[in-house]
Length: 151
Image (cartoon, rainbow, N blue to C red; front, top):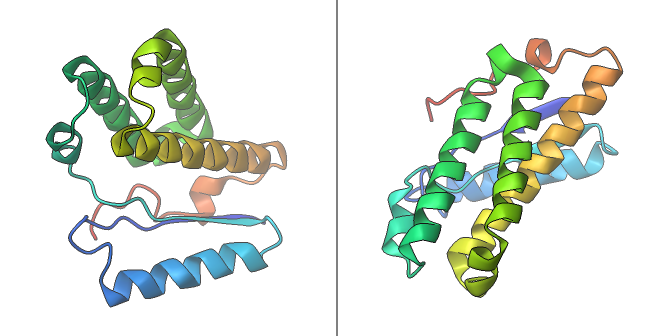
């Protein structure tokens, strides 16, 4: 049976001792699981960080819209399941392809790099969830904390 742990932290708490310890334990837990567990700790929820950066305004809109779609798919996981995550990932990839020149022009920007890491993590989550589904394991029933927005 596989497990997925998602721990949300605001940007203001990302570097505190509690978050560092949780991140270290979560990563160790996932590493020692032999591939049956996945741990993710997104940094912050404030999309205003994207707008503070130096990205082209059009790219800011694209990144903001995609980040909101990713957040929504995680919040709605209990309802839509792995298929909802897969659809949002497909939307992200399609949008990246459609806006390739825009992203390429800003590939050296930290915001674009961070966005790429988020999409990579989403891909890992989707792959994990779909593999569990193939095995007949309902991740929603074993990971009721997914989408919990309380921390």
